[in-house]
Length: 281
Image 1 (tube, rainbow, N blue to C red):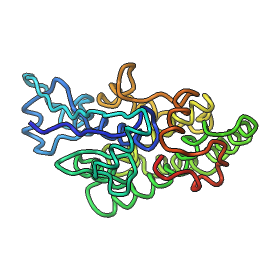
Image 2: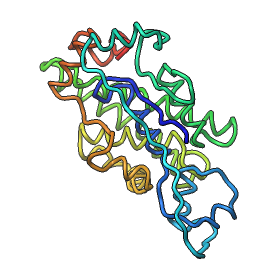
Image 3: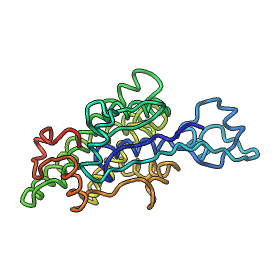
Image 4: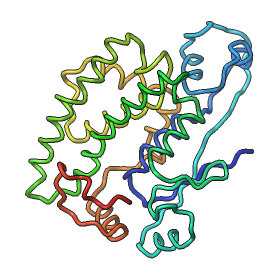
């Protein structure tokens, strides 16, 4: 049996949250048609399960049997600076930074490297270099918006209104129009190709983050509204969205205090200068 990936981070979203999302999307645990899998002869991916559940592929309706391939992950969450320093002293953090993921005998660090490895391993990174280039462009743009939202709770009280207006203005005028147009021009259920990819998972994550800032942020983007509903219904993702999953809540005052103590960053950073925040966060 393949060992579960082990995630090392503090008990909050931060840069680990997108990794949690991608690992969760890669998970498979359904009742399926064994002969469907034998007929299509394709690797098991979230999109194959989506096809199967929606009867979009071959419409096979033969006898059923149980099929289960579950990709789960464990978390080792530290709560103090001392616990973090102990992890550093253990020599597993290449740059003395987290997130870090133990997977396939490796200690992977650097968020984008981890995400690309997970996406490639579980069939979420496109079928060819062209699709991979599109996925990279989409997720890098989404990173810019997700970083703004991620750092928003670190605003000083007198900065919050200004920072929130800045985030929402950028979301509505720079970022969401790109993805609305991408869905319209592509004419498929997904951003790239005709199956689920890392870009779709990241877009849904960022949409939900933006809606935590303003519930009606998608009011001018009907295709993104449909996309949110459609991707949320994929079984592995829907399970991650349920209470009790390993999805983390937004930072509150207590978790902000814990993160400050662990990572030794200062509060009150301006969103337009986010690169000054300690990189290990």
